[in-house]
Amino acid sequence: MIPTIIISVSTFILVILSILLFPHIKIKNLRIDTYWIVALLGAIILLAFSFAPIKEVGEQLVSSTAINPIKILILFFSMTMISIILDELGLFKYLASVASKRAKSNQFILFILLYFLTSILTVFTSNDVVILTLTPFICFFSKRSKINPIPYLVAEFVAANTWSLMLMIGNPTNIYLATSAGIKFIDYFKVMAAPTLVAGITELLLLLLLFFRSLRTPLENNETVYQVEDKVPLIVGLVDLFVCLVFLVISSYLNIEMWLVSLICAGTLLLFMLIYSIFRRGNIAHVGETFKRLPYQLIPFFLSMFVIVVALNYQGITPKLAEFLGNKYTIWSYGYMSFLSSNLINNIPMSILFTNLTSTITGPEYLRAVYASIIGSNIGAFLTPIGALAGIMFSNLVRENNVRFTFINFIEYGVIISIPTISVVLAMLGIFV
View 1 (cartoon, one colour):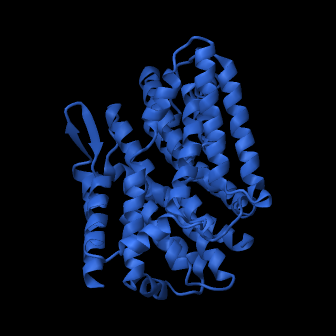
View 2: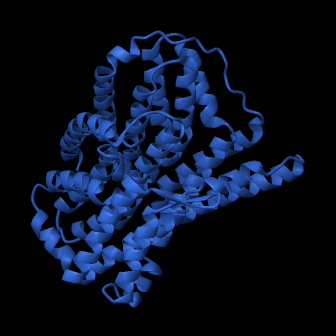
């Protein structure tokens, strides 16, 4: 038991240090993130010394259960692929440019429009894709308009990691925790819709109070609206996304697993893009860029953390942690603990760990603990940059665009916004579950 704890804790600490001190390594022109390499080494050590038996890990990887990590990765990557294709076709840039034009010279209007644009896009696509897409746009637009980009960057990140609560597909942590509990797509929405709405309103008010002075500065009017080059594939992409969401809602009634629905929809859209490009004698750059932008590093990181959690469970450590948390008032204990744990070990391994922790609870407190953990995994993302992969990507993008936004700055805003928000959401959750 003790060697497993030492290896696991050391891996978590080294992952954090790698993010803070040496986030990348360069091999010629290739830049590689280090956090997943550290996690992979930790998992290999646990497997090599049989602290996580290879047989047990293998059985869980090929199991037919809903928490099979391979199925969850397929679901996440399929939805991400659809989102990236829509972005490559110009949807996000078009909507962002329309928002900036509508605002005219009023920063308050622009701020609110971009907040709700981020929120809506996150609900129907993915928080990671929204952050990857809108962060460079905000940096570029702010420099051109000579305004402070920080209010918009903070609002974008906060909105993306709050409105991702609305649907099960908004975040890989939602997918893992919800499917492990056997929660249906529509049942998840019924519970999380109102708490997400209240969270969004709460944090928007906090953001407006925080950045009131900065937003009073007039904005240079921008009349340019980004033009979509070819509307046909964009319309097909939007229809494909709509069909996918509809079938995800009714998948449990049709006895079809969600990963299969998303895979078919992503595959269909990808096939259309290839055929359409050939038929129109155009290039297939959109398809190529889509594959380049997929977050492949999530695969080894997710699977490595899965192995670590299997080891903790196999060695009897997980039940002791569950005993510490208890099985009463789980909304608060699991909500706040998942919120903090996300910033100690990242929200992906946290969700895998908390799946095992919540499984020890019986009765109505079980679902409360699961939903509370989902809330903590999302809102914990904007307490520190370590809380989620989105935070790591966001920090890198801001740095690459020469915007000064330090680790301390992130925490200062994160504490002010995340703690009141999670408290309000957990209180709302108690009403609906």
